[in-house]
Amino acid sequence: MEIMAGHWLILDSTGGNDGMEFMEKVNDHVIEHRRTIHRYAELGGMEYKTRDYILRQIEQWNLPYEM
Image (tube, rainbow, N blue to C red; front, side, top):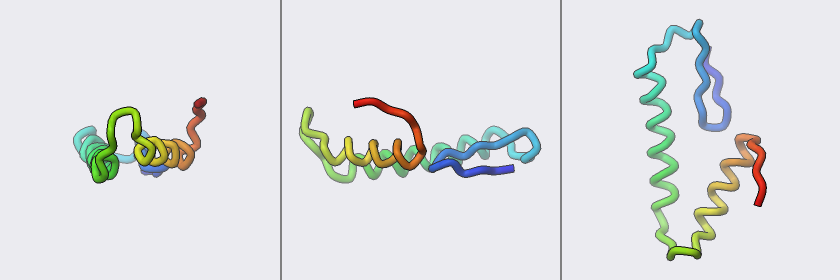
């Protein structure tokens, strides 16, 4: 059974997926986020687009956070 929660893939033991397949899917998502963040370089201490992107992802995934 596969459930997409935001971009995170959650697998249970009945899904028949092996660990390598899971890691490939997670890796693809990590690469996608890294490319998005690095698409527009920002100066240190002025990473406003990066901050906004990360906050949008956190909110999409319904993760608690404090600022």
